[in-house]
Length: 547
Image (cartoon, rainbow, N blue to C red):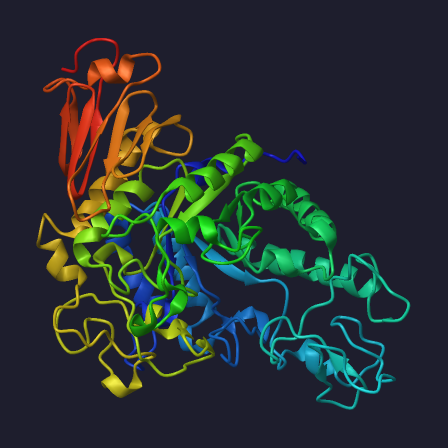
């Protein structure tokens, strides 16, 4: 593993919060969320206890893919406000102890970016990947040139997202567009990435989540050249901005952290296991409509048909490979796949999921609205490239944040038809105001769990973990002292425990353990019984009795 500076201290114990800016809060009544709207709700995040937020792309864009088609990396999209509004958001967040990170679309631009329009007219421009036009038909996946330049270009995702040229891991004389990673075009693009990152970090941003970080160098066996690219950038980052964080959308923590990232996300899809570890934990429907919830047993299933073992095995392997040099991020959801509250999963199941996420030794990332149990909304129209297939519409996890009861849910004063996306139409949709007033709500539960994680560092990423039972309930010991029990199943579940050293079993006597947080878990002599959807965190104390 390539050696880098340690991860920034602030990141190691952080709780992340992802904000989809156009859906969070609208300050000017145009129906689209903006920077000022986020700033107005920073007190919610500070009260909740999060340490950092990352914003989905907020750069200038034609929004054919919700901002992941960038037309100017150094200018914010007018729909969100001005650069001064972003600077004020960063400043106000920092005053509350919250850092702000941006989403960096490193591998492609919009086809309306000035770089691309120039390249479409200049056969000698190698910023993108182009054929020379001598072929009878464009190669697979290539798109015919829209300009005077002959040939075709390679898109990275949608056709309107031409791939930036970072070279190929394997060249081929029969395909002359396959330049090596150190050709002039790829070198210029690496320099441009540094310039973009330097610009935003210099304005006070705290780092980046990098979109499709694995995809830069094409036909790259083992992602070796892609790793070299990010290692080069990380060495620069360590020198120029040592307190900045770099998070990967890679889905393979061992590979991405070795390449130079501080953390990588377990994803619902992608990576060497195609997202199976996260789907086996909480299968969020992969962006599907509720009516087409795919058959897939996951551990957080009311029928108790799943197993946490695929997740646990992947985490153990990843943690072993990282060796303390980076972090694995565990999200509740994100803008590309459905929320925790989707399909058959109901509100009463959600506290158990958060109890696991916020006590497991990973970097937790809460998707906006999941802290109140916002639901995936099925049946929405395609909006800004949200539909990716007949049963895969990302719009349902991008609906407006629900701040309060009432027609606009506190999101916007605009008429409903102008909203970025429709609100959840359910009469019982959850909202922040209602849950703030209810001490037993999911929102208060999440807040208490974050506070518990902060009060007892052994519950964070650096504390040891011992898995005592990997069925229903899941029982694990953090830091040799804190017993965490979660039962995602509807029915009561019990298990007898016997620790290897006898310490845990000896401590599991009625009245000996102190309940720190939770409900529905009873401890007996070397046994644990958890009610349906029950969870708890117990302090078993040290060698002596718990006071």
